[in-house]
Image (cartoon, rainbow, N blue to C red):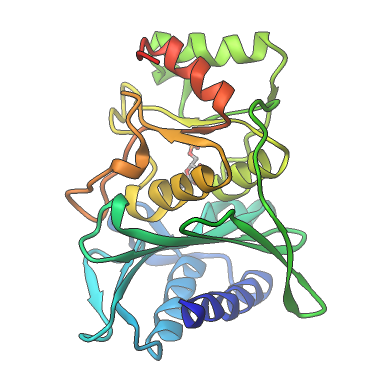
Length: 283
Ligand code: F6P
């Protein structure tokens, strides 16, 4: 695991450099979710593939930018599922973006996730790593190296509300939930980048990030293996909660396909409780 973590740190430097210096245009291809790939998406994917090619414990890679599973080392132990540059269209307008990594051992399902990490490329580069039975750890680049900053613990109740998806397509009970939180004094914080949005909620104590099932996307938008499960693990390790629209822990998800999505709700204990009431889920 140490080698994987060190590799993620070097990947973060390379992707950060690419964001700062490379062409922002579109490539001529689409990813497997049908989204146009930016040159930066493709390049970040290649940076990660190249970096893990020399890490023998990595058996397979599954990327948001690739259709199938890429075998690297037949004798390896871990599969790394990653989104190389989540929210990449925000680079254009100079907002923060991120990379997400889920490290699985065995069959690709939430219960087999052994560690996860994400990198935020913003005014500063930050990295959060979570491993079993440990609080997530925040690292920040200072003088060209990652320095360990602090363990992350969420409060029981926060102040921020990050509602994803198009309001026009929200279910009635979802709108009631979002309005209720605002009526309680919650403040809107939504950039359209999952990594900085979830990072902000976690570091500022708590709140709710939601990406529900909508009339146009009943299974939501965010992908289980590279987005939902890695963050669910980090939120739970920080003392928060992460569930789907039936109240089932996202850490129980069993994807049928590498690109399956799921409605998802990440928050502190209080807001998840409010969500359950609005959705008619038994406590
Ligand atoms: O998965 C891509 C992504 O950009 C996430 O980072 C983000 O949370 C979400 O899509 C935003 O989607 P929407 O614009 O539909 O709220």
